[in-house]
Image 1 (cartoon, each protein chain N blue to C red):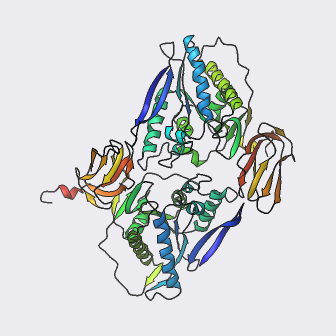
Image 2 (image 1 turned 60 degrees about the vertical axis):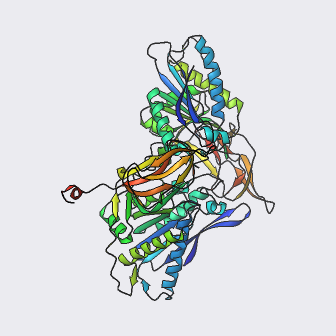
Length: 317
Length: 323
């Protein structure tokens, strides 16, 4: 494994902030494919770091067996100062780096970082995977999110990744400043994985994705194909009209009564919304449909309109 | 008239209430003014309250010089929770509210607020967004636009502000973009730095907005004063903005004021090593021009912009002999 610094900046008080890329080179003169795995754009999303740790561990062993026909690049911590403080945003700038890709208006260090990172990934990749956890509010079942329009190329690749769900969702303009969208626009097929919740490591979900990414490497010819076929979950592929979101009708505290990954039936209770001051139950939250519960609210504080759960249904809602 | 346009219940009692100010009758071409999209942009909030005070006095007949002919709407405080938290963003959702437009009435708090503001202003003819510089910077008062068409140029001239800066596209989910896409003649007035109030700058911008309202006949000035013909705004293209970058990290001590003219090679300030106090780098202007943005917060990283200079390109007449 070769480690290179792709971006370095002096800090006011000490050692530089550096973004590192690890490379597992191909054994062939020309790699069959080059893949980049990126984690830590948001500093409070730690599951991607654990996934990278497990992958690096495994890939180092495979490197000794000359198993690489393609090239693997791992960017394990692309927002180092946010990771060190455990915050979503780069703290000094209060900026979400994953909202700065492709923007040119105001020169700033975060936009310089996103520019350099994007160019580096583009010049080293035929394929990319951007790994995220959810925010502090929602727990997510391992899933790949694909913006409508990109699904033709991405769904076949996403099926290799051992996720429970592939959610093809409508485009929203806010996505245009993200790394995933920018790479897909640049014709580098990029899968965006969402799993678990921020500031925690769900080991089972992470191991599931590690297996999926290794399978992706094998299926795309990057790793030698002599390995036995991994036992991969066939994901549920859902279109936008087959996702039902349950939102709070009141402000209060949501106390959940179920977990993601459950198949729930119409009318089944998901949780309770309570008034913490008056001691009243404001709402019993029941599922309006049957299907796979793939998102559940973990942060209890809600206001009207807050998402509480998402369900993938068989039929359009 | 202060009117509650949205009330959002909260878990612990007091609801969150969004207020709109309006003056004049509907049916006229309307000017909408929005400030406080970021909770620490205090100049805009102060300026909006100053305008409220003025327009109240006009409508109540206390101000002898003006009568209101058109309609004005203002949302002095857009990002209520961020302002109450004393921060740029609302810590609960960490969302930049200026990336939430056009919003969603059924969505979460920031989306619902954005939707209410957008809905109440979408029939306006003109739109003004009041903001401060990005975090750590100070802006000289100036106008920001994304298009320089005839209508926008007229608005800029009517405001009688010297500096008009054309930016590349703003995010599609910003209020600016949404207003513009709805054919509202939109500009941003940017001045000062976050978390600080510069009353002098606000007073100058207040007079600019009054000038604009008189020029567009939203207000009638009974004194029949001839408009100031001396202010001719200078229009800068995106490429005219030159960033001066820090080559080292440390503590930046500035030696110039924002809003002044600088010459190539002129010292802007220096960066000192925090441990030794020694000078690490002298920061100099890389071009002649107008210093529109300057670093205000002294701690800097390497490669950070220290200043933005709007370059003073000569017109072709400047190259003629004897000019």
